[in-house]
Length: 88
Picture 1 (cartoon, rainbow, N blue to C red):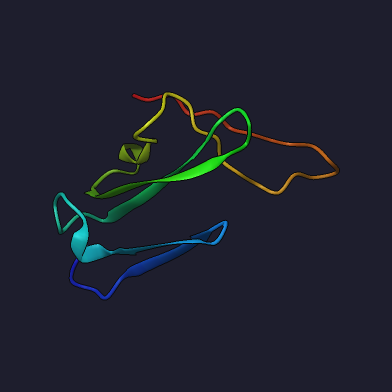
Picture 2: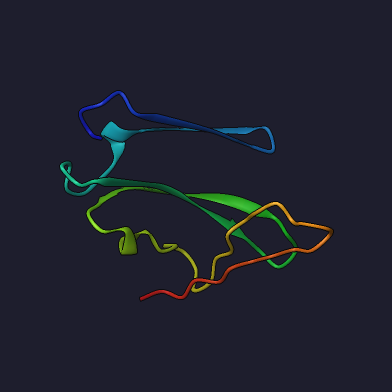
């Protein structure tokens, strides 16, 4: 990934965040690039926490800033579904 022109551009409520693989830390030959975490508080406010780290194992992709994170998916029939992750 490091040697590629990989780039992530994210727009969260009008705030543009741009990430380039050449800015990430860690083993440059790693298979995964953990770019950022989305952190949601109890009020539903979402912030971007840059991680910018290469990792070799998918299990290393746990949220960096909080003991719980929620995966966001489109609610079906008015139902909100969240999935909690606990740090290792």
